[in-house]
Structure formats: structure tokens, C-alpha cells
Length: 114
Length: 113
Figure 1 (cartoon, each protein chain N blue to C red):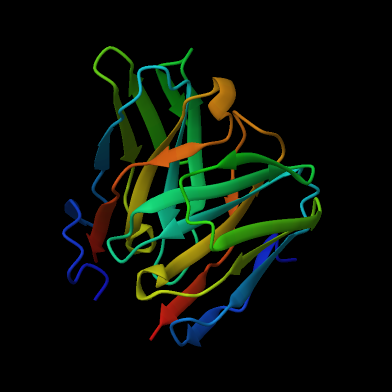
Figure 2: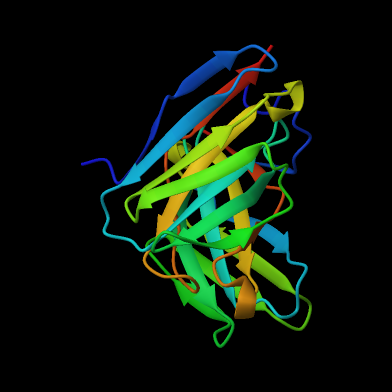
């Protein structure tokens, strides 16, 4: 299956539960953050983003929280559905001369059980 | 309707061969990227072009050469393929150079035998 041999962090939830996926980023100069969802055999798909002048941003069923003090990002998914099962990546953009250079986290496998 | 497309989807080849992967975006974006995703799902940027100009060039062997004939296309040519080049290669595009959402293609799965 998707997770065989990958050794990524995993999160298993029941359908309808809320999910929280965490990410520690590395560069204190990063000023733009994005969450991506990658389903098996597909490319990463944009979910939500946040800039460093905000600490919370909400989308449809998703909320991103940013804590710059401890360099932590989280993605909350409300009422998780089986279709949310995927690998989730956080990415950071350090700006400056690195504009557009996204550094991706290792990914978290989310499995939603019906 | 495909926003970012790549060809081929699968590529199986022998060590030492030269191969190319093509990418096209119809979003009108100015910036395009190549990423490599290894077997552990780790995604790492390789190159970025803005309006046909190279703006990001990570520590990538010079066997890899990107080419951007126009801002809607960014191709990746790989010379003398090695076993370690086996990975999934993703093309992406964004409207500008920074603070912009990057939209990814479906990936090209390269297997070097």
C-alpha cells in the first residue's frame, strides 16, 4: 500500500473526526507557508497557505495555524472524510533571493477509516 | 483543461541513456519549476525559470539541463542516466517568483535499470 517502506509519520482517524497534522519548519526567515495534499500516483495539490504576518487562516473545512515563536505549523481538517486520505506536506518559502524556492517537510500519511 | 501537464507519465530506460521530460502549463504563469521526489516521498526543488530566465539552480549534477523555449514550457534533459536518478519528477508553475502558490503537474515516473 501507500505507506509500505516509507516510514513517514502517520495519522489514522475515523470518518467524521477532526484531524490535526503538525509540521516543524526549519528556517526562521521563512515568510510564506503552504500545505499540499498528495494522493497516490498524483502530484501535490494546493490546500491552503499562510503568510508570516498571520497566525491563523481558514478555508473550507481546513484551518492552518502558524506559531513563529516555535517554528510550528499545523493543518486542521474538520469532519475528515475518506477522500482526505493522502500524504500531507508542509512547505516553506524563505523569500528574499530564495523567492519561490519551497522547502518541503517530510510528509504525514493521513488514513481515514469509514 | 489540464493546467500543468507532463510527458511522458512513465519512463523506463537503461543506465547511460539520455532522456527528456516535457512540461507545459496553460495557466499563463511566468515561473516554472522542476522537483524530484525520491522513494521516501521527499520533495526537493531542482530548478526554477521565470520568463525563460533561470532563477533557482540547486545542487544538481550537470547531467541535468533544463530548457525553457517559452514561458509556458520547461523541459528537463538528463544525460548519462544513473540508477540514482530513478524518482518521480514533478513540474510546477506559479504566477510570480515568490509568495505564490505553485501548481504541480501529475509527475513523470523515471526508472533507470
